[in-house]
Length: 436
Ligand code: ATP
Image (cartoon, rainbow, N blue to C red; front, side, top):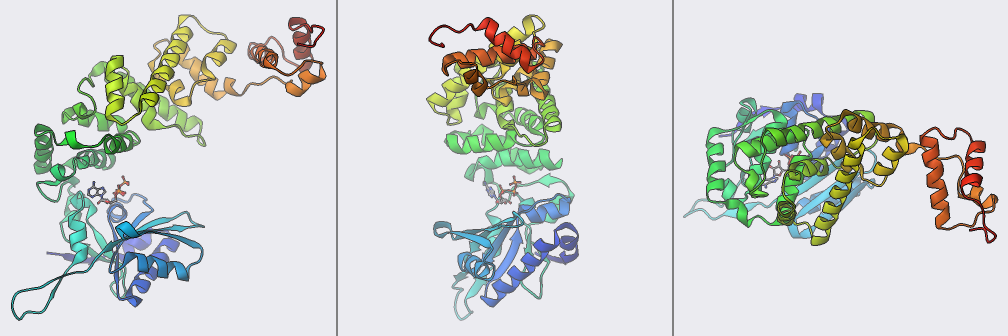
């Protein structure tokens, strides 16, 4: 049974005005073409959760591509890309950055027995039935005059209120095991709980190892999305409790010791986010380094392989990690000078710097990384290559040596002015006859 309810006013409260008028117009356009359009999925769910979400999904009963093209004709500023194979389209709104996906639910007619007329089965309902969880099956009608009418075929609203993640049917995880990871993500993101029956189905999927047929590509996609969540560590803990970590690698553990490193990484990431509002790091990579840290090198290779990393990628990752650990050990041996910090860290990616920061157990080593990121990283000598040329030096490998030396001198306070830099160069790099 469908419970009907109009949520136009909730939409008006939660959605920016331009989005609201876009949706209304879409309903009109669909109507003129003889189609029906619905806003569906995550953005409807998030209206009720009071979470901003401007990734809009529209399902068109009829022809989604024809609908998108017509809308595009009326709005030249909107970029329309169609995907014939899937009968889908994507609309990108240049000004607002809004992105909207359109899918087609083809009207499916079923001959009914005897003299009864042909029955039109709601294709929207069929489309929604194929989705992952009840909380993602809400739809809102966009056509006038019923704009804002909520269609809740599968008790999605009840489950949102009960904070429950529930699958649509018992074979859901067998059909698509990635849904298990999606369930954990939604659960942790919203503070929900996987329903009892659904949790039983997760355990069943583990029992029959439904995950073995998951391709590395898809598994990596899920893994990465999970580690990009704000509550990534909580997601991993939940995976552990559901005995799902083995899917990635049988040796992955998450006991107190391993948890501590992940929590330190969480703290390092939070620090970075607050300190550098305009710079982002690949959060998933930071957590990947932490999660795989306790594994033996062979275990890390196996994990990388399961996630579809090429031989080259795995080897590069291992080299980068080794370099980071070497730097960490040197930073920990004794309090390092500013120039030492600089040259140990400046060739490392920020993700690896945060790994060092979290993993180091000496306070001064942690401090060294933050000092590097906050200020040392930007220290440069006043002189540059042109200045060296003007002094009569010939460009070549020597330039790098001189400039590195000047950077170190700056960092350690050996030189404070340009004059002092020049004197240091002349003293330490006497020119030979050929200028080298
Ligand atoms: P997120 O914020 O993580 O993107 P979302 O709910 O918007 O959350 P998407 O991954 O963008 O989710 O997917 C859009 C919709 O497609 C979802 O609402 C969901 O119902 C459906 N969907 C996505 N993946 C699956 C799947 N593996 N099986 C069934 N339905 C899926």
